[in-house]
Length: 186
Image (cartoon, rainbow, N blue to C red; front, side, top):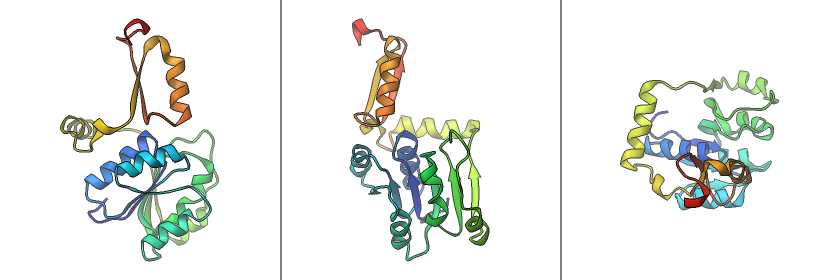
């Protein structure tokens, strides 16, 4: 990413929201999040992001915001088949599509548009030591205001409740399990 790049992030869960925060911190120009869940849209708006609901017109709105060009970089942190169909529409010609979310099964993707628009499609999986060092510094300095991120910590014996809270997508963005806690002192 270069300073001033326009960025669209599909999914305002923990990974998508953190992706958007880092993009803004690194100098992205316009950063837009796309999220179907109203509660998560509200969290992203509290971080002063423009947030679009997911729908058929979402790529049109992303293009409108960039003078009809599309975003320089589109991040897919949702990992949902409906999102995969929109990625090529939201990215500009010679834009980059970053696949961050993990799909449960292979999604339909408009590869013809990837070809004609000369998109760069990049997957993510492994991080390097420098990535962890940079992430740790951002956390230690609270450069992204992560202390404001709605987080809920569960004791180890409430793991089932923690997974249910994460799946619900409301009430907390990040769910943590702390094995040092138990229900008696949670």
